[in-house]
Length: 296
Image (cartoon, rainbow, N blue to C red; front, side, top):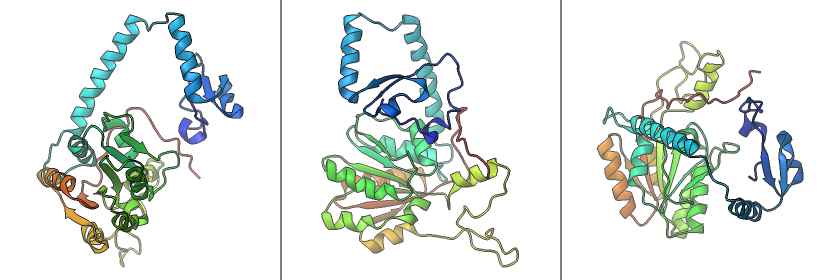
């Protein structure tokens, strides 16, 4: 419904291998509706879905009971997997997955999570449990680094009654954090959780998965002996940076500190930034999905 079925979203068509799969494509643009040899339904998405629903009701269409049972079984299996991944095993040194779970638990039913780039959107897709149709806002079509805080401000402008949680990696934060100032000017409070794994770790993983050694994707000093960026990690105080812009700033490392920081942030009346250092190389399982990344 409404997708352009581009190379990025379809992994250059490699996500669709089963020869029995057929597509019905709803799109206002006929050129997109015909892609993948689909049965094209050219029209407005809502109007077309309404017409399909009316047709299904008139035809007394029903899902087969065994299919419904299978979906229910798979959902229970998935819920158990998510619970296991989000569970905190080392309260003093959290993983990114732990932080996602803790923020999710701290959020309310109508609150909105915003993210855009890095490994976090994929992890949020797997681990975040939204309760409201507008509670999950991802800009992931082009993985636009830096969108997060500006996008979160836009979400808050659209509905000031909702608490907005911006989840952003340290790499994206460094690219564009200055809309914090705009949020303060306009009196539009957002809660920004900076998940700090000392660099662009998802790109490091992609780099190494193609057979290359790790190079240039972690925030390290250049080692004068080797001449490359494999020295100590650069200590960046994101809380101090946020405080210098006028935001409420909190550094939280342990599970207890993060939970306390989130409760405090919800009580604050202006933009609050929570800096959470996490384990650097601990990843959420891929679950047999992948990024189709060609090697130059």
